[in-house]
Length: 432
Image (cartoon, rainbow, N blue to C red; front, side, top):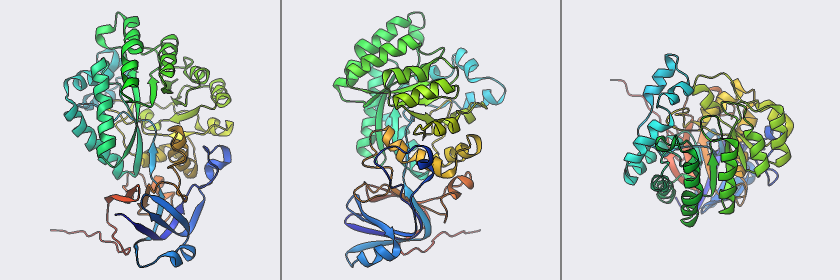
């Protein structure tokens, strides 16, 4: 679909219009909803958004019209922490956790990240591309239009580059927008388990230069955790990445309180992710440094933990909280942002409005794309979703339901459910 497009008959046009920055405090609860709304798109950008009474007189014969039929329209979700490129899966470990094994026990026994590394190293670039493309369809069906995409299952120079080239190819060939992050410091590979310093040297002296020279990543991330990378190792890798022009993200204080949040603040990281164990001191450090916390409640759910990050303390402190899925084959095989919204409200006591802000405009700013996406305002890219509900709160409230009817990326329809132009519901049930 090209040219001029109008979306009318919107019960709630959830615009998230507001200041040109991430939203904090009470701002996170203000979605700038236009009741009985409408919107006009020309090419890939929004030209106007307002009430139906204001917008419909602007529609002419050259404008294609879609009647949303009294449904919600919102910005596409922006999933700011994912690991979508990998081979195989770890369904066997899911079963092991159900039988009582912990995430740490499984990793110590040779499972976890290392099991995915073996399969990913053995896969070709084309095989990884096809598998990841299938996963991106799941994101799209959940209303996600942009994802941050990490490497981290190669852990050799060539395999990390292979993964990032797959991310670049997915970005070039598919509808979903991907933002690449280098995560060579995801785990110490088996062949270096007795020579940790040599692997850190490999990241700093070989991986980072090649990633930077090929322009394969915008960000560098490190899994700063007991059993992964120490504070000192993380600092060295991230300072080297910064020298190469990469912006910083950090897995911090997930399984233990080891100072990851404080390190993210010290280094000026853009985000500190996970933070299940972060304390008030760490939260204060993040706030003082302007680091955005990315909270990943699906990973808490899927490893069978009950320790969720203290989202309320973070919001009350003035942090611009972000929500993401942490989609990966081990700790969070979850591509659904609606499920994350449900968990944010039920387990972290975020209001539905705060959760939506965290999954759209705040997430956009965490990826340095807040000027382009994350809200529905004139001049911004037309990434939006029509949901089969009349109230935005239903997206999280009716859990486990695919509410998505149509997904638009850059003004183009990418996914359709049971709604057609003219607002007629074309779902049918055939019983034989």
